[in-house]
Image (cartoon, rainbow, N blue to C red; front, side, top):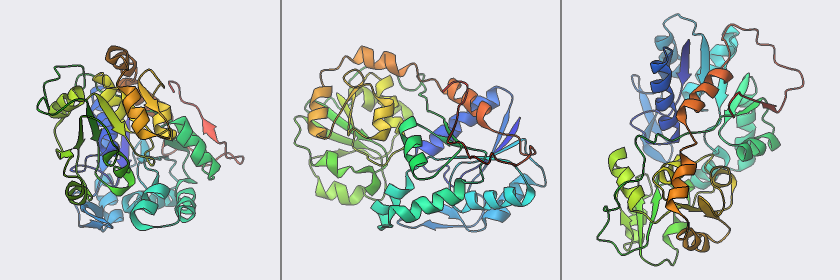
Length: 351
C-alpha cells in the first residue's frame, strides 16, 4: 500500500507527532508498504506564532502537489491541522478522495495557553477541519469522549506504543551526583506543558527537566535549583528515565504523553494530575499515581514497584499500533459518501 502522510510537524521537531509517525514509517516500510511524508522541509517556510524554531509551509499546496507528482495514493492521512493539513484537505475534497485525519494535539488548551484564544473558537475550527474525514484517529478514549462532546464524529481510538529496544530497565548511575529522590519531567519546555506546576513543588531530593522549548530560558532563570538538561538522544534519555525515581507529568493539555510510556518501560513510575491523558495511560497505584495534588501523587509514586511498572509498559507495542493504522485508513478512490447519521465512533481491530 502507498500511504501519503501530510503533517505540519516533522524533523527537526521533537514531539509525539514526529515520534509516532516516524515509527509508523519504519514499521510499515519493514512490512512492504510505503509511507510518503509531506512536511514543511523542502519548500519556503515561516516561523510558527510564538515559536520561531517551528517552521510552517508558505506554499503548502505547491509542496503537496510536488510530492504527489500527479499520482493518486492508495490512502491519504492528514496528521495535523496546519497549512499543509488544510491544503491536503482542500485537494482531497476537490478530487473526491476519501481520507482520514488525526487529532494529536489538544489545540483549544494549547492556543489558550500560548495566545489567549478562547477554546470555543478553536473547537469550531477543529469541527470544520475534521468533518469531511472518513475517520478521525484519536489516541485515547477520554480524549475521544471530549472531542465527541465538542461535535467531532467518526472517531477511532488509535493508541500509542513504546519501543522497548530503546527504553528498558538499566543501570541507575546517571545523575548520581544529585540528592535522591530524583523527580524528572521530560518533554517540550512550553507554556501548555504546565511545567510550573512541577517546578514550584516542595519536594525532597532533586528536580530535573529534560527537553527544550520556548520557555526554557525563562524557567531556567526562575528556578536555579532545578537541573535543566536540554534535549538528548534516546540512549541518554533512557539513562535519565532509569536514574529518576519518579517521572512527573504536569500537563493538562496532552492527548497522550509518550514520555509516560517511555519512563514506565524503564521501570519508572509516573505522577500526574487526574486528567484525560494520564488516566488513559496509567493504572492508579500500580504504574503511577493520579490526583489533584501533584506533590502528594509524586510522593506516593515513590513506593511503587519498578518491576511491575516495567511489565505493564511492555504490553504497549508499536506493532499493534501500526496494524490499527492499516485497519483505519481508507482507499482514496472509494466513494466519499459519509453516513448521514455521522456515527460518533468506529472501532479498529486491536484497540
